[in-house]
Image (cartoon, one colour):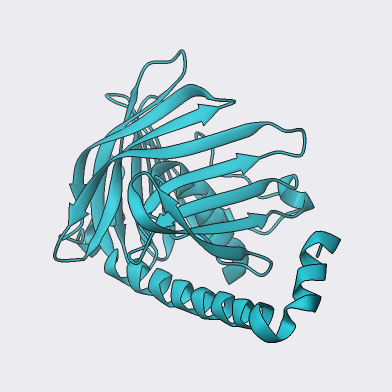
Amino acid sequence: MSLRVLVPCLVLTLSGCTRKSDDTAELSAKVKQRLVERDSKLGGYHIAGTVKDEGLDAVPFSFQYRAPQRMRGTLGAPASRIFAWDGTHLFEQLDGDKRFTTFKSELPPAKLAGFLTETFGVFTPEGFRAPLLSRGATLRRTQHARAPEAVELSLTLGEEAGGVALVYVLRWPGLDFLEKRTRAPDGTEAEVRMDEEHCDEALGLCVPKRLTRWLGGRKVGETVLSRVDLASPPPNDAFTLVAPEGYDVQTRTLVESAAQNPPSGG
Protein backbone atom coordinates (compact mmCIF):
# COMPACT_ATOMS: atom_id res chain seq x y z
CA MET A 1 0.00 0.00 0.00
CA SER A 2 1.40 3.41 -0.98
CA LEU A 3 1.83 6.26 1.51
CA ARG A 4 -0.75 8.26 -0.44
CA VAL A 5 -3.40 5.61 0.32
CA LEU A 6 -2.19 4.78 3.81
CA VAL A 7 -2.39 8.28 5.32
CA PRO A 8 -6.11 8.92 4.57
CA CYS A 9 -6.95 5.46 5.91
CA LEU A 10 -5.18 6.21 9.19
CA VAL A 11 -7.10 9.45 9.52
CA LEU A 12 -10.49 8.06 8.45
CA THR A 13 -10.39 4.60 10.01
CA LEU A 14 -13.57 5.11 11.99
CA SER A 15 -15.51 6.90 9.29
CA GLY A 16 -14.59 5.37 5.95
CA CYS A 17 -11.78 2.89 5.35
CA THR A 18 -13.25 0.01 7.33
CA ARG A 19 -16.49 0.39 5.43
CA LYS A 20 -14.57 0.45 2.13
CA SER A 21 -12.86 -2.80 3.04
CA ASP A 22 -16.21 -4.35 3.93
CA ASP A 23 -17.71 -3.18 0.61
CA THR A 24 -14.79 -4.67 -1.33
CA ALA A 25 -15.14 -8.03 0.41
CA GLU A 26 -18.89 -8.04 -0.24
CA LEU A 27 -18.37 -7.19 -3.91
CA SER A 28 -15.74 -9.93 -4.25
CA ALA A 29 -18.12 -12.51 -2.77
CA LYS A 30 -20.93 -11.45 -5.11
CA VAL A 31 -18.68 -11.56 -8.18
CA LYS A 32 -17.39 -15.03 -7.31
CA GLN A 33 -20.94 -16.32 -6.85
CA ARG A 34 -22.21 -14.77 -10.08
CA LEU A 35 -19.25 -16.05 -12.10
CA VAL A 36 -20.09 -19.57 -10.92
CA GLU A 37 -23.76 -19.05 -11.80
CA ARG A 38 -22.86 -17.68 -15.21
CA ASP A 39 -20.54 -20.62 -15.90
CA SER A 40 -23.30 -23.07 -15.03
CA LYS A 41 -25.67 -21.37 -17.50
CA LEU A 42 -23.09 -21.88 -20.26
CA GLY A 43 -23.13 -25.62 -19.74
CA GLY A 44 -23.45 -26.46 -23.42
CA TYR A 45 -23.13 -24.43 -26.59
CA HIS A 46 -22.05 -24.40 -30.24
CA ILE A 47 -20.38 -21.41 -31.87
CA ALA A 48 -18.88 -20.84 -35.33
CA GLY A 49 -17.30 -17.94 -37.16
CA THR A 50 -14.00 -16.57 -38.37
CA VAL A 51 -10.83 -15.28 -36.74
CA LYS A 52 -8.62 -12.80 -38.56
CA ASP A 53 -5.19 -11.40 -37.73
CA GLU A 54 -3.66 -8.33 -39.33
CA GLY A 55 -2.26 -9.07 -42.79
CA LEU A 56 -3.78 -12.56 -42.98
CA ASP A 57 -6.96 -14.03 -44.43
CA ALA A 58 -9.86 -14.84 -42.13
CA VAL A 59 -9.83 -18.45 -40.91
CA PRO A 60 -13.12 -20.27 -40.22
CA PHE A 61 -13.51 -22.13 -36.94
CA SER A 62 -16.16 -23.79 -34.83
CA PHE A 63 -16.30 -24.89 -31.22
CA GLN A 64 -18.66 -27.15 -29.29
CA TYR A 65 -18.75 -27.48 -25.52
CA ARG A 66 -20.69 -29.63 -23.09
CA ALA A 67 -20.10 -29.68 -19.34
CA PRO A 68 -18.19 -31.18 -17.79
CA GLN A 69 -15.07 -30.88 -19.92
CA ARG A 70 -16.23 -32.08 -23.31
CA MET A 71 -14.83 -29.97 -26.13
CA ARG A 72 -14.49 -30.07 -29.90
CA GLY A 73 -12.76 -27.43 -32.00
CA THR A 74 -12.40 -27.25 -35.77
CA LEU A 75 -10.01 -24.82 -37.46
CA GLY A 76 -9.79 -24.09 -41.17
CA ALA A 77 -11.60 -25.37 -44.26
CA PRO A 78 -11.65 -27.43 -46.36
CA ALA A 79 -8.39 -28.97 -45.04
CA SER A 80 -9.33 -28.63 -41.39
CA ARG A 81 -7.75 -29.54 -38.09
CA ILE A 82 -10.06 -31.02 -35.48
CA PHE A 83 -9.34 -31.50 -31.79
CA ALA A 84 -11.83 -33.19 -29.46
CA TRP A 85 -11.87 -34.31 -25.83
CA ASP A 86 -14.64 -36.71 -24.81
CA GLY A 87 -13.79 -36.78 -21.11
CA THR A 88 -11.35 -39.69 -21.48
CA HIS A 89 -9.46 -39.37 -24.77
CA LEU A 90 -8.08 -36.53 -26.86
CA PHE A 91 -8.53 -36.86 -30.63
CA GLU A 92 -6.54 -35.00 -33.27
CA GLN A 93 -7.63 -35.14 -36.91
CA LEU A 94 -5.43 -33.44 -39.52
CA ASP A 95 -7.26 -33.52 -42.84
CA GLY A 96 -4.40 -32.03 -44.85
CA ASP A 97 -2.02 -34.83 -43.79
CA LYS A 98 -4.78 -37.46 -43.52
CA ARG A 99 -3.57 -38.28 -40.03
CA PHE A 100 -5.72 -39.31 -37.07
CA THR A 101 -4.33 -39.67 -33.53
CA THR A 102 -5.99 -40.81 -30.33
CA PHE A 103 -4.31 -39.74 -27.09
CA LYS A 104 -4.94 -41.38 -23.74
CA SER A 105 -3.91 -39.43 -20.66
CA GLU A 106 -1.62 -40.32 -17.79
CA LEU A 107 -1.38 -36.70 -16.63
CA PRO A 108 -2.31 -35.67 -13.06
CA PRO A 109 -5.72 -33.91 -12.98
CA ALA A 110 -4.26 -30.41 -12.55
CA LYS A 111 -1.78 -30.89 -15.42
CA LEU A 112 -4.49 -32.36 -17.62
CA ALA A 113 -6.78 -29.38 -16.96
CA GLY A 114 -3.99 -26.98 -17.90
CA PHE A 115 -3.16 -28.98 -21.03
CA LEU A 116 -6.79 -28.95 -22.19
CA THR A 117 -7.07 -25.22 -21.51
CA GLU A 118 -3.97 -24.60 -23.62
CA THR A 119 -5.19 -26.84 -26.43
CA PHE A 120 -8.77 -25.54 -26.66
CA GLY A 121 -8.21 -21.94 -25.53
CA VAL A 122 -7.67 -20.85 -29.14
CA PHE A 123 -11.27 -21.88 -29.94
CA THR A 124 -12.88 -20.11 -26.97
CA PRO A 125 -13.45 -16.35 -27.43
CA GLU A 126 -13.43 -13.98 -24.48
CA GLY A 127 -16.81 -13.90 -22.77
CA PHE A 128 -17.37 -17.65 -23.05
CA ARG A 129 -14.94 -18.44 -20.23
CA ALA A 130 -15.02 -16.78 -16.84
CA PRO A 131 -11.90 -14.86 -15.76
CA LEU A 132 -10.13 -16.35 -12.76
CA LEU A 133 -10.72 -14.40 -9.57
CA SER A 134 -7.38 -15.42 -8.10
CA ARG A 135 -5.67 -14.30 -4.92
CA GLY A 136 -4.29 -10.81 -5.33
CA ALA A 137 -7.05 -9.68 -7.70
CA THR A 138 -8.72 -6.36 -6.94
CA LEU A 139 -12.29 -5.35 -7.75
CA ARG A 140 -14.05 -2.03 -8.07
CA ARG A 141 -17.30 -0.64 -9.40
CA THR A 142 -16.98 1.33 -12.62
CA GLN A 143 -18.89 2.48 -15.70
CA HIS A 144 -18.50 1.64 -19.37
CA ALA A 145 -19.86 3.01 -22.64
CA ARG A 146 -21.90 -0.21 -23.01
CA ALA A 147 -22.95 -0.52 -19.38
CA PRO A 148 -24.03 2.11 -16.82
CA GLU A 149 -22.88 -0.33 -14.13
CA ALA A 150 -19.80 -2.50 -14.49
CA VAL A 151 -17.12 -4.23 -12.47
CA GLU A 152 -13.39 -3.91 -13.09
CA LEU A 153 -11.22 -6.89 -12.13
CA SER A 154 -7.47 -6.22 -11.98
CA LEU A 155 -4.52 -8.47 -11.26
CA THR A 156 -0.84 -8.86 -12.09
CA LEU A 157 0.23 -12.25 -13.39
CA GLY A 158 3.26 -14.01 -11.90
CA GLU A 159 6.77 -14.17 -13.29
CA GLU A 160 5.92 -17.35 -15.23
CA ALA A 161 3.46 -15.22 -17.25
CA GLY A 162 5.89 -12.31 -17.64
CA GLY A 163 4.43 -10.08 -14.93
CA VAL A 164 1.66 -8.80 -17.22
CA ALA A 165 -0.96 -6.51 -15.65
CA LEU A 166 -4.47 -7.66 -16.61
CA VAL A 167 -7.79 -5.82 -16.38
CA TYR A 168 -11.25 -7.21 -17.19
CA VAL A 169 -14.34 -5.01 -17.42
CA LEU A 170 -17.63 -6.91 -16.98
CA ARG A 171 -21.22 -5.65 -17.10
CA TRP A 172 -23.03 -5.73 -13.76
CA PRO A 173 -24.87 -7.77 -12.61
CA GLY A 174 -24.67 -10.46 -15.34
CA LEU A 175 -20.87 -10.13 -15.69
CA ASP A 176 -21.06 -10.06 -19.48
CA PHE A 177 -17.66 -9.42 -21.10
CA LEU A 178 -17.01 -5.83 -22.21
CA GLU A 179 -13.25 -5.55 -22.58
CA LYS A 180 -9.88 -6.89 -21.48
CA ARG A 181 -6.73 -4.79 -21.23
CA THR A 182 -3.16 -5.98 -20.71
CA ARG A 183 0.03 -4.07 -20.03
CA ALA A 184 3.45 -5.72 -20.24
CA PRO A 185 6.37 -4.62 -18.01
CA ASP A 186 7.92 -2.92 -21.08
CA GLY A 187 4.80 -0.74 -21.43
CA THR A 188 3.23 -2.59 -24.38
CA GLU A 189 -0.56 -2.30 -24.14
CA ALA A 190 -3.10 -4.63 -25.75
CA GLU A 191 -6.89 -4.73 -25.63
CA VAL A 192 -9.79 -6.98 -26.60
CA ARG A 193 -13.10 -5.14 -27.10
CA MET A 194 -16.63 -6.44 -27.39
CA ASP A 195 -18.14 -4.63 -30.40
CA GLU A 196 -21.30 -6.70 -30.90
CA GLU A 197 -23.05 -9.24 -28.69
CA HIS A 198 -25.65 -11.98 -28.69
CA CYS A 199 -28.08 -11.88 -25.77
CA ASP A 200 -30.17 -14.80 -24.54
CA GLU A 201 -33.19 -13.60 -22.57
CA ALA A 202 -33.97 -17.05 -21.15
CA LEU A 203 -30.45 -17.46 -19.74
CA GLY A 204 -30.23 -13.84 -18.70
CA LEU A 205 -26.79 -13.22 -20.19
CA CYS A 206 -24.95 -11.91 -23.23
CA VAL A 207 -21.87 -13.22 -25.03
CA PRO A 208 -19.68 -11.48 -27.62
CA LYS A 209 -20.59 -11.88 -31.27
CA ARG A 210 -17.81 -9.64 -32.56
CA LEU A 211 -14.51 -9.00 -30.78
CA THR A 212 -11.70 -6.77 -31.97
CA ARG A 213 -8.07 -6.98 -30.84
CA TRP A 214 -5.88 -3.90 -30.46
CA LEU A 215 -2.16 -3.40 -29.88
CA GLY A 216 -0.78 0.01 -28.98
CA GLY A 217 -4.05 1.61 -30.13
CA ARG A 218 -3.96 -0.14 -33.55
CA LYS A 219 -6.49 -2.76 -34.58
CA VAL A 220 -4.66 -6.04 -35.24
CA GLY A 221 -7.43 -8.62 -35.51
CA GLU A 222 -11.03 -9.62 -34.95
CA THR A 223 -13.24 -12.60 -34.23
CA VAL A 224 -16.73 -12.64 -35.75
CA LEU A 225 -19.29 -15.30 -34.84
CA SER A 226 -21.88 -16.25 -37.46
CA ARG A 227 -23.47 -18.88 -35.20
CA VAL A 228 -24.17 -18.68 -31.46
CA ASP A 229 -26.31 -21.50 -30.05
CA LEU A 230 -26.45 -21.45 -26.25
CA ALA A 231 -29.65 -23.44 -25.80
CA SER A 232 -28.84 -26.83 -27.39
CA PRO A 233 -25.94 -28.72 -25.75
CA PRO A 234 -24.19 -30.99 -28.27
CA PRO A 235 -24.76 -34.73 -27.67
CA ASN A 236 -22.02 -36.68 -25.89
CA ASP A 237 -21.12 -38.67 -29.00
CA ALA A 238 -20.22 -35.44 -30.84
CA PHE A 239 -16.91 -35.43 -28.94
CA THR A 240 -15.76 -38.96 -29.76
CA LEU A 241 -14.14 -38.94 -33.19
CA VAL A 242 -13.74 -41.88 -35.56
CA ALA A 243 -10.90 -41.97 -38.09
CA PRO A 244 -12.04 -41.34 -41.67
CA GLU A 245 -11.23 -44.03 -44.21
CA GLY A 246 -7.73 -43.84 -45.63
CA TYR A 247 -6.20 -41.87 -42.73
CA ASP A 248 -2.97 -42.86 -40.97
CA VAL A 249 -4.18 -43.90 -37.49
CA GLN A 250 -1.96 -43.64 -34.40
CA THR A 251 -2.37 -43.99 -30.64
CA ARG A 252 -0.24 -42.02 -28.20
CA THR A 253 -0.11 -41.23 -24.48
CA LEU A 254 -0.03 -37.86 -22.75
CA VAL A 255 2.60 -38.05 -20.00
CA GLU A 256 4.00 -35.51 -17.59
CA SER A 257 7.16 -33.74 -18.67
CA ALA A 258 9.12 -30.59 -17.88
CA ALA A 259 7.30 -28.63 -20.60
CA GLN A 260 3.80 -29.48 -21.77
CA ASN A 261 3.01 -28.71 -25.42
CA PRO A 262 -0.25 -29.04 -27.36
CA PRO A 263 -0.54 -31.92 -29.85
CA SER A 264 1.17 -31.34 -33.19
CA GLY A 265 -0.81 -28.95 -35.36
CA GLY A 266 -2.25 -27.09 -32.33
